[in-house]
Length: 290
Image (cartoon, rainbow, N blue to C red; front, side, top):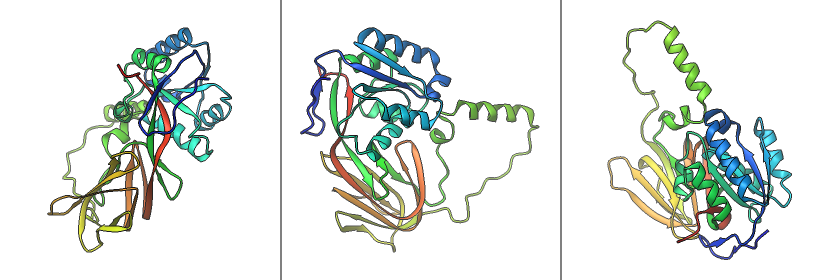
């Protein structure tokens, strides 16, 4: 396996020799776009020194495949959720720093992959796996050992689940919903009102121990996103007031029960949570510069 640089965040090192690959195909990818999965397997098998393809049927087999990868470089064929799942597993096993992941995005939720610099075309992504470079990236780790690869967002109190979470990556659900709408007679439309507890949240937000907003100030939204290496950018939007901005290594949010959306997943409710930036904590294969 080629040596890679791990000293600098966002640095990239090209692969210098053919490698043994473990291609793990997420079951959602197989159901949503079998043709892209086939193309990815063909390109990877033709270009690598040796390729082992694994077709897990669920999360347990997915985790088992990663644990038994040996010296093979893992290549995920799936959407954002598959990538987050793999990073989470390797982080909990304390093997993330030494394992470089590769991704061929296939599925409905691909915004995270796109933001990380991975091509969303199956052919281009598979070629980047073979000829690309490792990029070290920061990781946001919370006090329950959860991880955030991209953006973290705390929506207003009582806000509904976004369209991406409710539909993308679950074609069987969309099919069932469509079938129900077809079979069940239409009913007169009703006025939809917000939940009684909908509205701004009352949260305390601290960045590196300094308070950015306290409980007395209603908050419409809190967003945490990557900034300079080793730091996160925090934006708090108080109700009826200009946004508050800060940067730091740790972010603590506490107050009333709140839910938060990290990458493609929604978690909570919780009363308090602290996130810490781990600089250069994981590596992802992206197209080589130039």
